[in-house]
Image 1 (cartoon, rainbow, N blue to C red):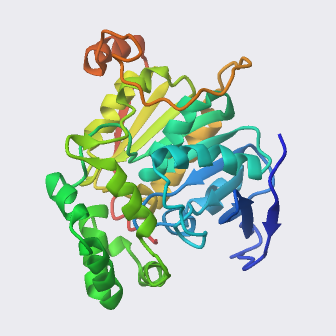
Image 2: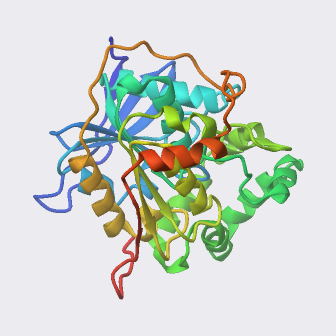
Image 3: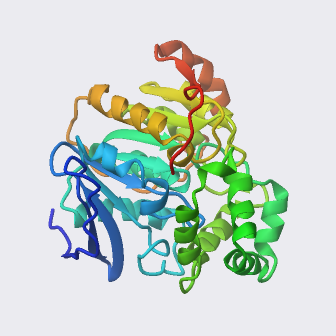
Length: 358
């Protein structure tokens, strides 16, 4: 495996104290795209953090998670093309290209395999890559993940507004023009309590929103995904094929992706466990960072790896159960999967009086 060229640039060497791992900025050159990637930690197994959609970036949702996990892991957190500081996303990309890009990021970093943590949109990409190339994934963590069902976030209203000319672009313009409106647009669908979004974090989000073509990549993916009958990418009928140790973390109050999707996925994935966080919406790393970090760290340290055989990387698969010759639907298969499993569901409440410091 030949790593692609890595251009390492220390834009900022961030250290809060002598015990906190240094956070470095890498620049990866992948398929002629400049990809910004945060790196922290110098020992332990590699860990790839994949952020979500909207105006997210590696340094936003995972800002409180990277230093904690870097104490025992080599952590890499890239900005997807079209997000954060990375180059724009190619206009032809859909979910399949993003799934492919996970492997190219690993190649660029010189990693044969790693554990993956994916949030929302990043969860769908991580899951798709795990199904395609399981030999390159040690452990999988899906956080309020997309790809576990076909319901459109926001329902048919989102489907129609996404296709109205310039409607979404106008919404983003209003977002940049008013801090009050920006906070309302962000908090309403994403978090349970608006207080968790600090002024500093809001400043960073607005700065990203002012960048050229901000939001274009996410709109591009949404328009390819939002179909009349539901989301185009749905891995539900393939979940039983996931063999790597998997953790599903989900906010019980998530308004975009219901926690029931994670519970159903847990039933279908034999080697999985699930943590449901009460009083939490779509962004557990932002809303409950201390609890979230403890859950992720414990899973990564205690889940044994499966025995590996030499297998070939699978071709992209968007086949339904019927196309693969299966008679059972996922709903029919769920009871059997549930009976085969011993890992339970935990519903966690944050400590009394707990407040996020995001």
